[in-house]
Image 1 (cartoon, rainbow, N blue to C red):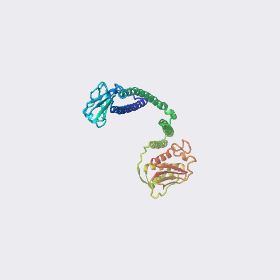
Image 2: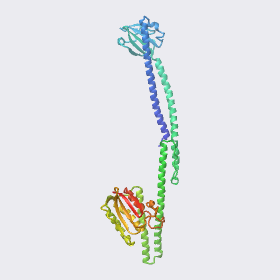
Image 3: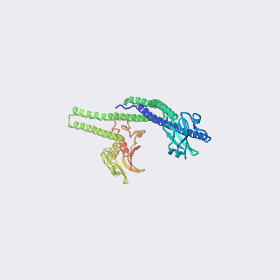
Image 4: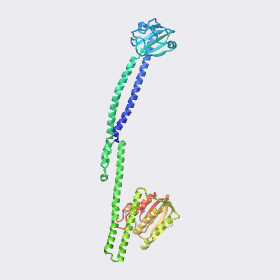
Length: 445
């Protein structure tokens, strides 16, 4: 189904609103003019009644007033009736035909009475009659409604002509203004259609209109900036991951080829298999690290939160790396934690501490100390050694992915260890920190 363009919809809505406004305004004008004409006619009848009352009191005749200033021929008339309803005097051409019923005469003897008549003798038009008491008699003064009707008919014709013309002009103006207002949107749409992953750095034009459209353009440009950053981050991540995967895969392939071509003895085959197994372990660790980071990026890292005794957790991590420390002739010491507990995922926090301990054994010196302290409602889990710590300027980038102190790709490790530590800490609502040879994660208590 083809959708109606927004410009047409805006113009149609504007036209509908204008039609309602014009109809209401026309009805209001027509009603006010009609009311004003009625009031004017009633006032005119009262003035005529006063003048004719004075004429009758001074002995004048209504018949003689016909065609004069007081009674206009063909438009107004007058009649004098007795208390019984008999016509005593009247203007021509009414003659002696009573215009009021006996009931109306009795009512008019006490107060003014307004009567609408469909016609009167000699005047085949609707008229209005004002009857009131006059020295025990009733004086009735009337006038036709033709002038009022003609005025209202002319006004109605004008409204029926001018109204549609005004509506058409207003609709065209609305259509033009809608197009003018939507022109920046069309410009933004064309630019947005041209933006792709190859030119994600492009931005939409921002109209200087100081309205919702300008704010929309700025918001979309900010969104494009975030997408550009995320895309650049993902491209770098994919490139780094590819580079990291290529090295162990190449070594694994070399080990297997050497075993196939030159493995003449059982010992040589075992040595080749041992080297291949190490590279497979490295690939497995790298894949697990990449999967964990990808989950944290999507906010989908599963956690099993429980109350964990810190001393038990540190002891488990130390026991897991005991053989590494023995081979390197180094010591791992677990400090007393004073019964500290923390609500965390035991497996994930143990993995993070294991990465810190692995770094300390791989790059540090001397004794490695595991400790925990409570600070500001949080629990800090520290891993420190006696070495010099990270090189100057590296600490602020240490938790970034695929970063190493020597900037070399051939160094041991994948460069994901510390970034995994940070990801685990942040998944718990905590943070990771470095100060020299001391690295720690802070978790909510």
